[in-house]
Length: 363
Image 1 (cartoon, rainbow, N blue to C red):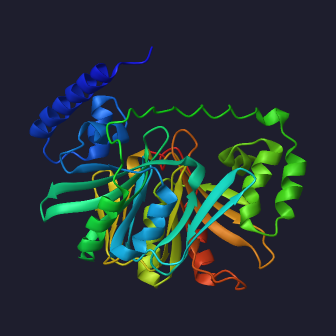
Image 2: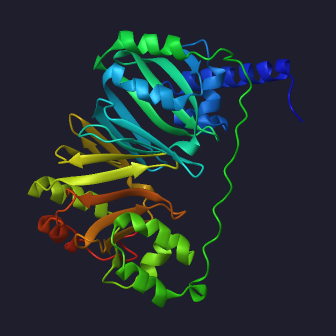
């Protein structure tokens, strides 16, 4: 049964009060964690906080994305439950494609490199929130379930005037309009191994000409990603210790190997290409703190790590792929490689040194 306007207003006020009480007890709590603590989505939390540095924008996310270049140098943030990927740069070179009821977007440049699955992008907010360095301004995008898919934060080098103009231009006409959040359907269960044509799967893997064909391969044989790795053969996929990403980043730093790090969620994949230099490990977290690239990996939640080799028309491409306990991708690492070039020998050597998975290494 739908709530009345008054009931919605009361419900928002209650959630706002609970959030304020939570902030008193935990002043440094992040919005994502606060929402989880309150049992609501992060987007729903923002709807309760409107008028207190939070402005709902129009749902025209593609147009707003095209305007981000006006902000100058900003920080792009994409995350999932286990990993946060932050990259500083300018939103140059956007492009969007709409075909067969599928909408995709791209930002391809040396700083901000994104793959956008626009069918999931739904709501947009502007936020101006207190921080240790003053008021921190951002544009935040959410999917239809209220989960954050991407955030854009101003930096000291950003054009703050352009930000204020953008917020005013795209401010929602009816900010108190009731937002209906929709939960995504659970992923279908993976078929048992005995029901899969593994010989055919192996032959199809052999025949790949591009790494992007792999998703179609999984759909064709109706198998999960890790399930495919377990059964294709050790020459194409081998499981390694769950500290593999930490080890790889240390070797990459020490041997000056440039790499690509992909981190994403259902709506966005964000890519860093280049070196990593300043690494830091704390309890439960492994971090990169470089001038234009930061990464934060929750090491406690890495449940599966695999070195994979996929054939392409330009030679085999190797990757390190990380998964959580639900079989969802946390992050994927490749050696830096331009189109038409073979894979770096240095990158292959680094992956070859990773120890095999064992019950002790899973701890």
